[in-house]
Image (tube, rainbow, N blue to C red; front, side):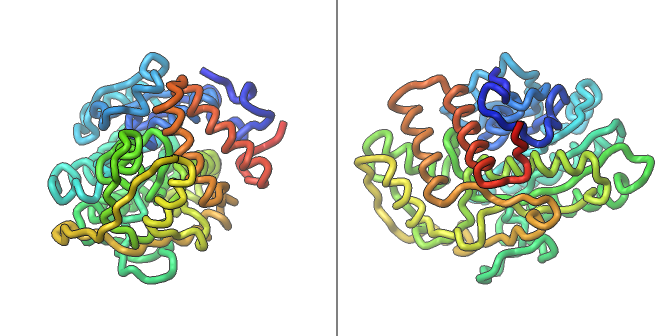
Amino acid sequence: MVEIETLNDNICFLDTYRNKKVLVTGNTGFKGSWLCVWLSILGAKISGISNGIPTSPSHFESLQLKSEIDCYDEDVRDLCKVKEVIDKFKPDFIFHLAAQPLVRESYSDPVTTIETNVMGTMNVLEALRQANHKCTAIMITSDKCYDNVEWLWGYRETDHLGGKDPYSASKGAAELIIKTYSDSFFDKDESNVKVASVRAGNVIGGGDWAKDRIVPDCIRSWSSDRVVEIRSPNATRPWQHVLEPLSGYLLLGQILANDRDLNGEPFNFGPNANQNFTVKELVSRMQRYWSGTKVNYAENSDRSKKESGLLKLCCDKALHQLGWQPTLTFDETARFTVEWYRNFYSEKKDVYEMSSKQVEEYIQKASERGQIWVNSC
């Protein structure tokens, strides 16, 4: 694996993760696999829990990370198995990403969605409660945990939780479970566990092949010279590159490990307030970087699977309490995303090298723009 010093002249997150044991649940997923790349660059000792490979192609498989980290093929719905892994590995940090991540899939299978997203979250927390070894846990939920009434301003961490679809409801419920465990078990001097929840959504980037997502739908069509069908072109989302929230998660882990005052706190991680764009605007920006694209815009005809038209986050808390803010512009987000796929399909580059180089470029831009988590040597 590539060490951070070989990539650039910056050390990230005060070298907090070097030689630390880090457990990533959902490590074979889109965000989880990118987090494993970054953690490997940071010198962490990584283990993962994931119930199989969620997509084909797969970013995780293409990275060939399985030989580099300890992978446990377990279901987070199984408390005994989760506890067994945590007791054996004794992680210094946990990043809990394992989930059923798709809104439309939650309509087809609400039971699995709720079991995975709610009970899976509880099982990680319960295993930590029983183990009670020193550990900092970052619990990833979603921006869709909020009761979205589609108002024009961004949701704050104090706003109501809820959800009109099973996925959103499961994420709101997971947040309640996290708060319950934090207040009941971890907010005590005798507890060695500290937790925080993080809310981000509409994350895009190379290596995502999930169904019913705008970027993978475009790439699948464009790579085969087909017309992509866009079902909700006027829906507005807080689009951000996958490395943006991951930088926030890693910064929060660094700070929380040394600051019990942040225990149990939720944080939003999203783009600047002026960077909310429609689906159509995102696709148009992506077209600049992929030639010969074909798009058919049509309003969603399946009204049985309701999706919100407007969603915004307020990230002031992350800025003022953590010093975190996004790095990339909207155009850079589109370029990072499309260039990764273009290289994957046309140049057949080594995927780990390709992905780590994007982490390198992201860190360099963060350094140039004065981000607090980048420290020059």
